[in-house]
Length: 154
Image (cartoon, rainbow, N blue to C red; front, side, top):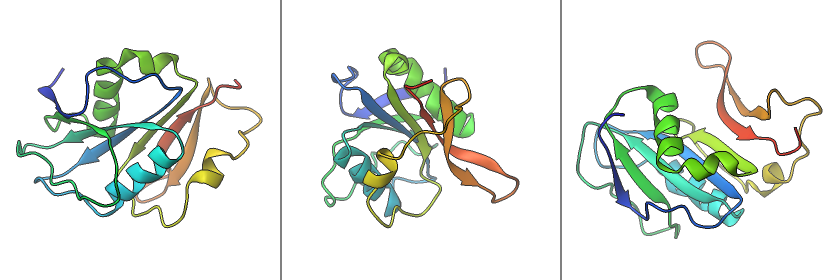
């Protein structure tokens, strides 16, 4: 595993059924305006948020005061893109694998611009693939899903 440390929060996952791991990248200690907003929306919908930040910069993240959020922040060397960050989150907190509601997201998109509550309550597709379904398509270069969620009904 690449160099990993917990910058903020606990190494123990709280009792929860809902977890969101957000893969984040940045060349310095700043965060986009969207990352705290996305974190706040997940927390508002009952998700424990773990941000895995890939960067060669070791300074603590400059997390804004508002909106009020309480994510666990994990720092790691910049290896493996989003998949590497999600893998680190799942390795550090193996209990996530047993949770019925897990979202794997990234901070490369702008937003959200509205509440995520309707999305968190949306009905699941009739035939999810292996209990995992894409939640956010991305066609920036070629079509691919950029965020994933487990489906407890599969």
